[in-house]
Image (cartoon, rainbow, N blue to C red; front, side, top):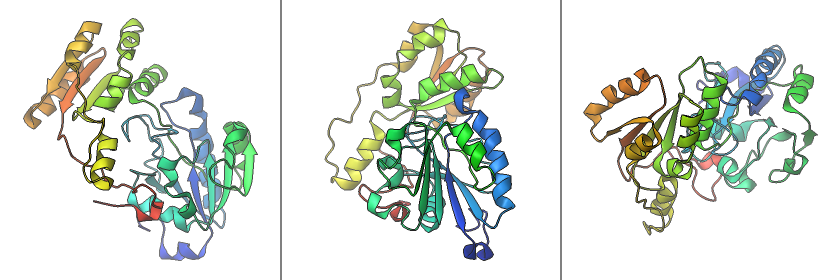
Length: 313
């Protein structure tokens, strides 16, 4: 885990700073945070502190490409101190490492239960600095040592000589998030990876995509279930399934009715060609991919557990 976090054994004796922020490329309003993040990272490396950077997996507050069913873009994933996503379906290393940190700097996050797990076990050693433009979020779920009600850009600029920061992605529905990313970064190919349940919740946005000529691609992972809830019911309620099975429409037919191109894939051997077709399409495209109906997603933090009790299977 130390290697994954970019740390060494010698770093254990130095103050450790865990960072959560909400700047990401998929949200044009937050893109200015990337430059600030780089400046602050340099500052912490020149100090006596050790910083490690995480994204909240949100599924809440953040990412643009669609994890946890809906979203995200990870601009800091190549940084040597970036260790991955926090939360219920986040990465193993940062969920454990967060409990060891001395200082937790949270920028623009809600500390929702998908990120914290059992609040009584959340970051037990950490002093918490919480920056948010909404005063009602400060201390709402996690007690803070320092609460800063401010615009993130101004707050981080003022803190740049003291702390390090990274990237936190917002929990957004993947299709609208991908649309926003495509509008903000028209120079890049944007693909939203979406569960079939999440796609049904925002399927009306296909009309917006056509009307505004947004060249976004949507990959639907179609298992016929509300997958996250089904997994909980399997693991914690003895497979007593309730209100989770979906009677999905023909997604390709719906896309074509709106005027988009689309394709359905039911065999793995067809997938590469289908992806090539989607990426070669100049306009919007819906790729409906049939997947294993009862495949579980790990890592996962059980309901009521702390982040350090994350399961790998």
